[in-house]
Image (cartoon, rainbow, N blue to C red):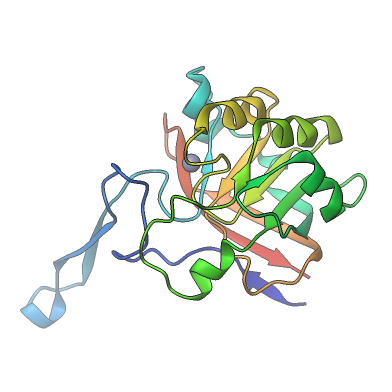
Length: 209
Ligand SMILES: [Zn+2]
């Protein structure tokens, strides 16, 4: 059995969404300074690093992250590679050949190279799904979509893609690093933190082969 960690490591220089608070990881008690224990305090937006979006994020419907169905979080998944540049369209998804019947799809794009390279600047031109591609995934019966940058939707057009997926009950996982995994079939483990009333949550995400 091989396990792949496709989560980003939270560090203070991990890129965050423009306008969001940056990630702060502060040592507030330190053994080397005479305290009895090391204690770290975290401060960041719920949509930092590898995270999930709850329906409430774009729908404002009160369906927050602690209520995401557990069945979505673990199970068979396919890593599918697309060489799309800019926006991913339904034609790109057809070319990428999503295996029939797969309910959990992780899209590997050139975005993953930013993580592999340790890029610390936010990339506005990241590759993401347009509204029609989101509709296509819903028609296919996809229930979990994972992407390798900080949004499933293009930087300049966030609402339609998010709404299409969230209204259909699709779990969105963002900020995956797929640079170290080959396309193929795996078992997905995506465990978002159980934060009451939150529109999103950081998640540790693994693939098992
Ligand atoms: Zn998000």
